[in-house]
Amino acid sequence: MAAGIYPYFLPLTGHEGTTVTLGDRELVMCGSNNYLGLTSDPRVRKAAADALDRYGPSCTGSRFLNGNLDLHDQLESELADFYGKPAAAVISTGYQANLGTISALAGRGDVVFADRDAHASIVDGCVLSGAKHRRFRHNDAGALDRGLAAVPAQAGKLVVVDGVYSMEGDLCALPEIVEVCKRHGARLIVDDAHGLGVLDQGRGTCSHFGLTDQVDLITVTFSKSLASLGGAVVGDDDVIHYIKHHARSLIFSASATPASMAAALAALRILREEPWRPERAQQNADYLRAGLLSLGISPGESSTPVIPLRTRGVIDTLLLWRRLIDNGVYTNPVVPPAASPRLRLSLMATHTTEHLNRVLDALSGETDMFLREDQPDATDGMAELAELADSSAARP
Ligand SMILES: Cc1ncc(COP(=O)(O)O)c(C=O)c1O
Image 1: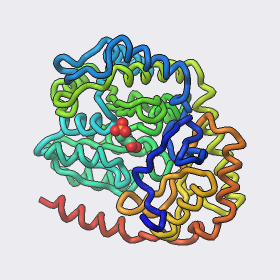
Image 2 (image 1 turned 90 degrees about the horizontal axis):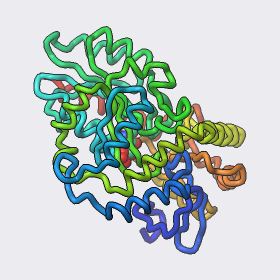
Image 3 (image 1 turned 90 degrees about the vertical axis):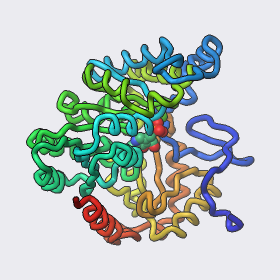
């Protein structure tokens, strides 16, 4: 901490979306998943304030009992309509949506397969479910195919993937994964936390591939593009009904606050009316990726507003993070076990070219701190070791 490189729990004192205040300094925010820039939109803020006035600060209970408002129901029906699916269940966070959905649907005797890079909430949902839990190499439909082939015919099979991977900004290999799931009779859940609001006019990864009707359930969060707090799962009526009556994270936890629901609802409506926002977020990401490449810095596999900048190790990551703060740019430092060391940048529709140029300027003096395309990750080999450990743990 004395070295000034402890990067966690920093108290920001102002938040205007594209900029934040840290101490007495204003920084360009490149660490927020506020992809559409809606946290500072006056319509979203007013909707939250009006709901606070009308309903108060809390529902003081689970949706199952006293904590259900017309706002929760309204958001469910507009989300389902947005995705073209029959129903949705709103759950208090995206983390709880994955936890509750997976653990409600899978149980002893079933096998759940999750991509190695899938979000922690998916892993925790698998653990809570009591099902056998296997992880397959990132985006490797062949590995999934082999894993599913080894499952006894009578066992229930569930596959869970992210639509957009949060550490790499790359897309799920959805067409291949869907094909493998169909062939083995496995159900498929896509966590589209980072696809909602970003891909295909905001309709997300499944829609981007034209496969929404081939995916059983889509889970989302409101804490990114929808500028709020909360989560949901979207799918068929009977499955959603079942989840609403069996997901422990929904039943045994208080419902999302009125202000959060009203903000998410307002943001969803704006997303539908303003398709320039997802487009601009992607254009900004393209602009930054081109600038990075011209500086000799690799943007990895990213094709979305999440851009990883790999570094040579943990210390370099923290030093670099600090130097960028000193140069007016806020990024997120990521270190193992979350992922190999990197700075993660997230871009918004509302970043201006001036903001992006400030980021590129700040990075231009640091190019020797990043891994080149031809250099291995600082943690290369870790994934293989973890895979070995996983497969032995999963043996009967
Ligand atoms: C892929 C993914 N799924 C789920 C979540 C959890 O969402 P929430 O912040 O609403 O709990 C996140 C957020 O970090 C995420 O990146």
